[in-house]
Image 1 (cartoon, each protein chain N blue to C red):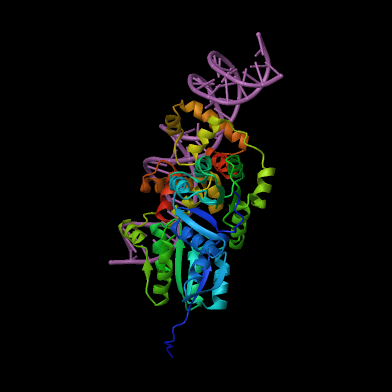
Image 2 (spheres, chains in turn yellow, orange, blue, purple):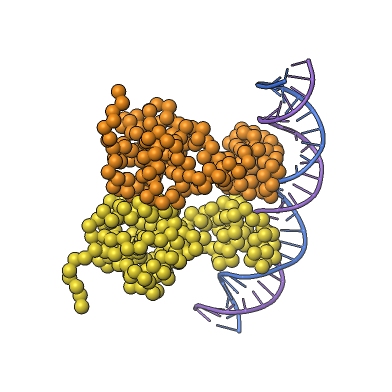
Length: 207
Length: 207
DNA sequence: GTAGAGCAGTGACATTTGTCACTATTCGCG
DNA sequence: CGCGAATAGTGACAAATGTCACTGCTCTAC
């Protein structure tokens, strides 16, 4: 049942910024072989529209409300036969790892030249994979996360302005326990405060 | 010397994200009366290219390396007869104030529908002004900054993970003095830590 | 079956941070 | 001239944070 008739690549675009979404649509619709069939502003809607429209490729922004790009990718790939390309502003190595684990086909930072994006989409539609070489290199040299689950939990909350007591409440732990986790995380990451440790972990894509 | 011949609006685009820049170019070039004459990725280059190409309108992203949108706007408007539209992801009220003080003609968040952007550019080219109504309303209800210059200086550094000692070093002040400034800023903003105070000040667009 | 890793907690301690009171200088405004 | 505000600082104190040692508990893997 293989149809060799060349026909357009059906594309779904998900990005929470209306302006960017519209601009990307315009850019990609200029390509004669690409057709934007859906355009949504959050991960949940992306999963729903993917089911309805069965696109060939889904272009998902990583940073989105409701469900982020990775969550949306997981949902979509478990229900629809399609390919996923993740686009992101902050291309952190750990996120690339998780994206690949979610069977994403493409991973490009927003610093990519616009002309290349259409090529990436074509490659992915053809069954190939595309990973931004810059990020791939960083991800391969970066060591993997030395932190335990609970240390990560504590660090996650340390990115906001919460006190140790508040973090302990959220995690249902004693304040002393939280301080121990934070302290060991700080030692492992060579940070001088939990905020610095949280920042490092974030940069690496561990939280 | 008024030429009534309708001719294209010459546009300069500045955005640090290559993909967005290209997409915006594509979107706006679709409009028959708009011509993108320059496309740069930082504020300094924007100022230089504005001088060289003398565009009718400059579309500047607020978040850019080297010189941000406001700095670029100030430089451009002091050297070239043109209009400036600021586009931003985080539309904070204080930033709108500073933008207007810099004689910017347009201010739109990236959540604006793409179709509207061309209209905004046309309005601005025609000598009108366009301010996103949402942000305008917020800016008008928001009270103005109760902080002194030095309090703001100290808070600026508090957004990163610096210790009081490090901030004091950067500002060439005694640690005690910095703590006093931070303490009074925290009182004024009703925050429980300098990080929270810095966060509030950032949200308001004061730093 | 026991060694190691992760989890949860306590207690003691040093350091950092935040608060407060109080001094002194400078500058602009009425 | 003098008042107030902003700047810069000191010293004392309380509270929060980070460090360390050490106790149990539960898994998992060898």
